[in-house]
Amino acid sequence: MNATGIYGLMAEFDAPESLLEAARRAYREGYRHMEAYTPYPIEGLPEAIGFYHNRVALCVLVAGLVGALSGYLLQYWISVIDYPLNVGGRPFHSWPAFIPVTFEMGILFGAFGAVIGMLALNGLPRPHHPVFNVSRFELASRDRFFLCIEARDPKFDRAATEQFLRSLGPQEVHEVEE
Amino acid sequence: MNQLTSLHLTLNRIERRSLLVGVVGLVLGGAGFFLDRSQFFQSYLLAALFWLSITLGCLAILMLHHLVSGRWGFVIQRLLESGARTLPVMAIFFLPLLAFGLHDLYEWTHKDVVGQDELLRHKSPYLNVTFFWARAVLYFVIWFALAHVLTKWSWEQDRTGDPWLTRRLQAVSGPGLVLYVLTMSFAAIDWIMSLEPHWFSTIYGFLIVVGQALTTFAFLIIILAVLARHQPLAEVVSRSHFHDLGNLMLAFIVLWAYMSFAQFLLIWSGNLPEEIPWYLHRIKGSWQAVAISLMLFHFAVPFFLLLFRRTKREVRMLVAVAGLMIIMRLIDLFWLVVPAFQPTGIPIHWTHVAILVGMGGIWMTVFAGQLKARSMIPVHDPRVQEALHHA
Image (cartoon, rainbow over all chains, first blue to last red; front, top):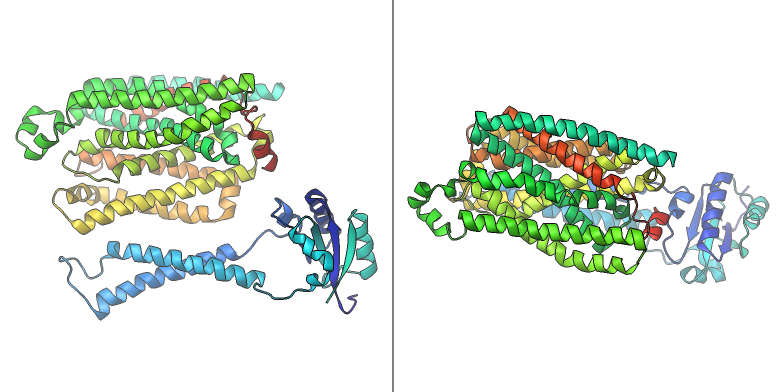
């Protein structure tokens, strides 16, 4: 049903409450591939468009564990295998002394995991995006709230979706070109 | 109205049962005094420290709440205030300890020991009975003043609706929090660290302070889960409040582990004869099992469980973790205090249980009584509408 050359349809709202309500109704209607654009974070909006889980937390956990483990193994390799030194008669494998570096490496890699994972998952930096084809979209960083239903949504239909969006009481409905 | 009374019925039930448990526990525990005096005071010190930690934890978290005004704070504000109001009872519980127990507990009160010990002689300007008493009185006076002022103004706001009282609460909370950390650090040095008067650690006071906050968060989660079944809390308490409290508990678990390990690492690295015996007593024999269980169940297991969002949003799971934390806090306190008397192995004695439970019964009676007397939500706080609206 996809009309070629169209990225989606975008409804413009002038209040966060209307956007929130519109997003909830669109989700109830069965739309899944949609995105909301607002000047500031709105509580409950991610859930309204069906965005519950982001995998950044998982990236942080995995990266943190990898960092901690490699930090520990690095010290183990240095102090036990490559260059064993007798420090105050302690065993070469003195785990308490390894903990601070292990901890710091865990934090460092966790932070990398957070930043890189976030960028990888949200696709930034991205110099261009079809929504910029709508000239009024620049208001999304000022005082307007946008809900875009994408053409790749299986339920998307050029006419029916536009009619549905209009029924939500937006300021305007824009066609987003590819 | 009907549902309001369901809360009152629950609180009445808690109050009655706690009183019964408290009286029975204390009578049994009191018998221990005549059977084995020093064992009695060891158990008594442990129990008093544990229940004081929830009282002061409530006071500290109350001040933290006034400073940061997080939405998690408004649903527990009355719990915190009621907890802080148990302070007079804790002061009464500490009286027999300070009046009659010092000679049984603290080596430095023995003149003959101090006379032969160069180090203890040098410490005696600080570690002597008169100054010890004076400091204890000072700590309680400061804590009592803070608890009194903070609860009085908050309840005055309930009556009058004066929004400016919030400012005054905030103005007291900043310096109050600093005072609490300072006084509790010194109290920890006096009451716990001086059990082994040769040993010292500068992070010890903070470790106790963090432990108090952790115990209290675990306690609050359990109590809130019970009371949130009834109105008016049922209407305002949501999963996200438990999520916030779970996150705070996680933060204090990590902080506890960080500080415990920092202390251990420094003493282990230094390996000095006046420092290391403290740890040697605590990792030898059956104490080793306790030390390992602390690493596993006071840190590793709850840490990984609380990383998951589900654990914090499913009230039952969160309550289970909080219950584990209460038990581990007790074991940690036991591990800190008791090896001073019994370095060879774990002495489980019936007075430990009797006095702990008895004192807890009385504590809960007073707590429930305080809770009954006021509204469960600070409705006139200017910040509360917004906080509850967004929850």
